[in-house]
Image 1 (cartoon, rainbow, N blue to C red):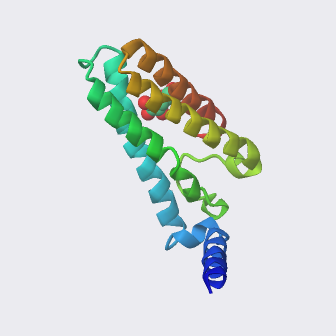
Image 2 (cartoon, rainbow, N blue to C red):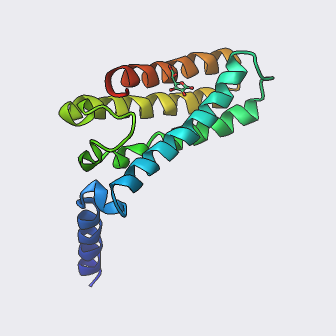
Length: 150
Ligand code: ASC
């Protein structure tokens, strides 16, 4: 019985994950809104760390940790919004996202790794360490934007 339950649970998870990503949204416009909303929130929290490492805001290690945690969590999210069916809708997304999907996925992966490293850096509570990790995330944003954002 236990085995059957486990198998059905596994099957349910597999079929859910196997849905095309657009199936998670009401329509393509919602997918675009979702990914843009995530990036907007990411920008706010990343920007707050930026203000601290650039000396525009007093360094608060606790806030930096909170913001870095949020950035790390958000970094996993936008990608399901990049359904190919959204190509052509008004947004900053270049068609290369789908023409060079593998490269785009590598950038997505890189951002998540750098964001996780920023979160670890924030836990050190050392501003110079955070600054270096912040720079690495920013570079990750920029290289992806240069290739895939218009
Ligand atoms: C930000 C932001 C970006 C990135 C990028 C880094 O704060 O909004 O898009 O950093 O400018 O180069």
